[in-house]
Image (cartoon, rainbow over all chains, first blue to last red; front, side, top):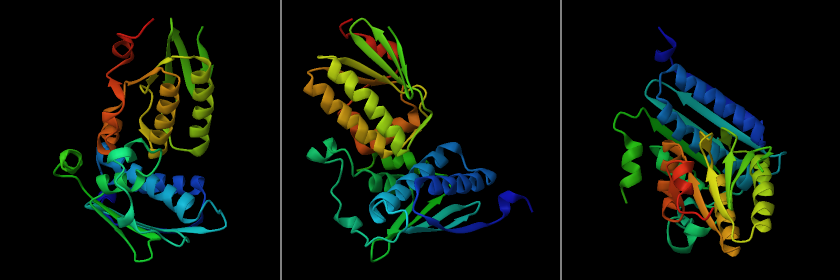
Length: 151
Length: 120
């Protein structure tokens, strides 16, 4: 059995520091590359991971590096499945203003969740709002292009 | 005179300032702060600045960079200047389209085209 047929699973429980989460991104993307995901797909996965980690470290844990970030990841030939949990009080992902509308367009922040939703196929939060679960299926349909031009 | 800041190559074309981002990835807070620390004095020192930001080296960025670009654009317009972006990788251009920032920034395929029509 080649590595492209195997299931890769790994968990981390890390201090809430960007350097730590960046290393996790590298490992997850390497596992996906070994399963022949296209670089265009991985760009979106990388961006979604970075945005989710930034939210966990800066907003969820409020930059407190004593607080932890837990990550569960699964990479197969069909999907990249990642859950990220911080130690914050959580937030309401459905209560966020749309950064594409009106004056929000000129705001300097608030685009991370939009980008995660644009590039990943499944994005769901737990009830508390401190855990995001994201799944990217292997892109056979050019979904990223469709996401761009659909309302 | 041309200048090299840690994350930025500055070229002067007469009155036009072309700032080329030199990092391939821009995602860390210290990178964003360093860029902001380079751009803001540059804009403040050049009233009516005509600024072109060249992305030809950049292959990856996060939404923090989009926030920085908005802060830069506000500062440029305060100074009654002009801002253009150019040479953005197609995958990064998708990020501008998803966030609809392609509607508020003037974006050109390359630096030569971005310089056309600016007062040199």
